[in-house]
Image (cartoon, rainbow, N blue to C red; front, side, top):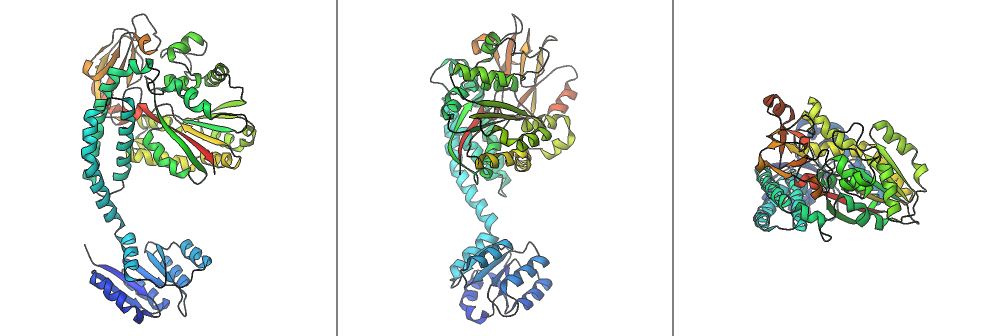
Length: 515
């Protein structure tokens, strides 16, 4: 590692000789200036790694010197050292983008700690994170071999996501590659778990909360006559995307609870989101609300009656609460909803579906520019966060907090970056989704799919007597043999959903009280 070159600016620099000798013994190179004017000249002529700056100096003050330094080299880190504990001094310094703030008298170890924090931050974090993940690697590997419960898979997926978010910010790409291998292994084993247990889990009263039971078991108990609740369903939001959004809600809301639930199969909007609002399985939706439910190849929109589904469910649950439903699919409708926020303040429940993330994932298939911007999961998360922070939804959340409304955020299903094709053949009425298919006489690779010959066994309707469902595993997608190569090139490395993966099935539901 190269020697770090420090400029120390203090009108009593001679009194700091013991501090300077200590730092030099740690291989830091120290240059000295006794006033702000000299310091500015030095910075114009020399490249320093960091500046230690006294706040109280004759002539140019520390704050004045700081402003000049930032005008010359805005990225140069500056540690302010002062005798003053006045709040306005600290605020001015922080407002001028100092890197740290130390109160005199300071000892050499305090300065060393601040230097390491600001200069060696990346390397130290990389070392610590890498060492921690290396310790955790063996435990995750052992857990993978032993998990045999839906709770265990939730815990493991959360753990893998935690390390993915930690490792993506360090310099060791090798560790991230190892984690990616663990995720692939996890998805392979998770697929086997779901294929073996899905039907039983759906029928088990002690099984996981699924899409159709989410409202009854998790959301409804939080609703009451005294407090308004804003329920936001962000279509196609994965757990990792949620975790990078969550910190930006913290200034306004205090999280009271977070749970994870399982999406039903197929992990697709027309099935999973309709199930949330209706509180019914797709089979029951078809039976009880034939005027609202549409199968894959039926004409017309598949999610046009969520408001009606919600009202019917609340009546069934005997929830006599004032409620409303909004679906937001454009920036214009998001702004209109935010502008007209006062109209919902008297509701006990306001349910809002935001469609942006789903549109983003589909845009990656259709638009080359989105393919470039969302080339991998890290970039995909970054785009999601950028949208959230700049969307009217962020303004709406702040208004809801000021109005004293509770907040619930969830999603209907996740998505996965598809990498490999799996061949499928069917009649013309075969459904179009890349991660699941339904239709007659399907031909497929059995090792790649969870096949359900009788859809009613997993509470799915059938378009025809002989229709079955198949759900593809891991990061595969279905491709037809006709024009196979073109098809594969078009859909490879795109975000798809409908199948079986941790990312698609294990979903967050978070509850907040206003601060």
